[in-house]
Image (cartoon, rainbow, N blue to C red):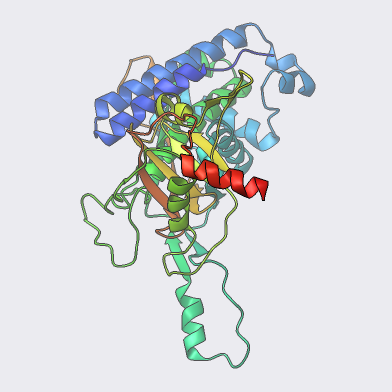
Length: 407
């Protein structure tokens, strides 16, 4: 087996730097984050390629080494991409190169995104392919109605369905391709492309899922208020929810938070059997872990102690001192290539080094919570470490208990 492409520390550093650059609208910082990450990916792949002859390896060996066995369509695509990228006029060659990323390659990228980023598994992450609009039921399950189909019932059913436009929002990912990488051949270029695009798209998607403003081509993030009648600013988008102060995860405190989600925005009751707690990785170790871990009398630690089934997800997109509590799969995130898209193009947006070319791919999508009550925005900055509770018993209570025992 090959060593992992890029360490988890490097991936985390890239995600943190990119999220910070996006929040601060700092183009130079974003360029630096892309460059440093992709250079590391390239170094790892080039080093592995020198020690392995992919062209003469059988399918089993390729799979065992973490390389994909390319289909005919995939091999044709990457050979064409390499040829176009090596042309004297690469911009024209890539413009004339009409091939788009095969669906199998896009699916592999999406699978890698979800595998490396648990948040994208927890949401309703949907590959919408070439769809431009997606319909979903904004309400919980409707009760069937016996009798004549009146106009009032029809309006109620129509009102529970929402149309989410996908083409309004665009997620652009960049990658760098040097001549050294192009010379390795289609199998290695595919691995590099998939690694770069999966991580870049995932980092951008996570930030949108958590923080998206809902305007200027961004999805509506979990922390945004989407209740009917909410004023939306053309510049800043949907307002942030007021962060609920949380100091402990006792049954009473946690139950009060969950009770708010046990009904839809329309006031209809809903059942759920597990929730997601999404926090910054640093805050998990500094705040959440101490607040949910206890030393037992036997000398061992019991951890992840919540009064209700809870799946903790760490994401660099969540700001320090904040967290999101939500119902699993109650955030819809649709992403696809869009009609006629999915092309990798040479880009002049970023200018790094003379011997490195920048390429980009655009995907279209959108995201939003099912309703305003599905997610709560929390302030966990003052959460307290978990400790044993001591119940004080008064003398009169002890006497009463003794009398009951004698009786």
